[in-house]
Amino acid sequence: MTVARLGRIKKIDIQKAIGERVSEQTILCSDSHVSYKGFARDKKIEHHAIRADLKQYVKKKVYHVQHVNSIDSRMKKWIESWFVGVSTKHLQKYLNWFRSKEMLKGSANFIEEFTNKSLDNSQAWNSFKAIPVESLSGLVPRCLRRKSNIFVCMSESEYIQKSHNVSVLLYHFVCPAKYRRVVVSKEVDKTLKDTCLEIEKRYEIHFLEIGTDNNHVHFLIQSIPRMSPTQIVTIEKSITAREVFRKNPKVKEKLWGGEFWSDGYFVNTVSKFGDETSISKYVRDQGLEKEYVVLHQSKQLVLF
Image 1 (cartoon, rainbow, N blue to C red):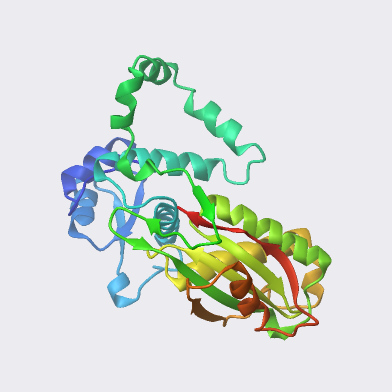
Image 2 (spheres, helix red, strand yellow):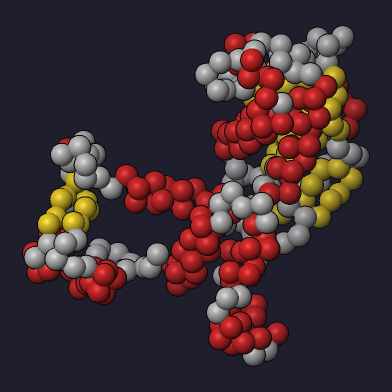
């Protein structure tokens, strides 16, 4: 994967990127940009332009660019999930990182293999070691230099301070199981709790309380302004559903269609002017007292 050009692509950019890999037997599939047509004409190769503007996605039942579109979509989601903005001058580094991640997808020893692959080029490693330590901070994109999590006591709410905003946002989510089936058991409870605590390590989402009501689950969550309630619940539902099915395959017997959560959910905001007891009671009061089970309760709000 190589950055061909920033901005509108030209025929010369295509030549530099893939010109040496093209032969007379090559068949080029692309979007309808005129530069690809000119490149194919110069190289005297067969060219099929896919007109997405005309809702044409496959040509002659063979030619398409869906693989490229899929890679592009996955890369964008990956960047949006892990970085706070990107720097175009480091775009090639992002591509290299993403390509390595895709190649090692599903690996049982991802970190070890990723590290070994990164160090395959001894020349690059030696060049890196020769850089003075005090100079390294300037080589790392600003968006990758995140601050460590700082935890503060929940007895009095603290504000999350970012470069352009200060906030303390608490959300109460209620997520029903698909078809309102009673699928929450002790095993599912444990999976939900463990998965949510792992989500905390990867996203700026902090679970203050998790509780179950047999066929639906309550989440009391603190997050930041950059993450909308829709983004938060999408992350929470997609990851927990995947892990519940993976670790508790019997749950699928009670559900059909391959979905654990219902498409809908309830969300409302919780005022910061309340102590730990009142906020927990607020969540608890949403369900049936006899059936409500607390899976997890945090005594801290988090300062991201």
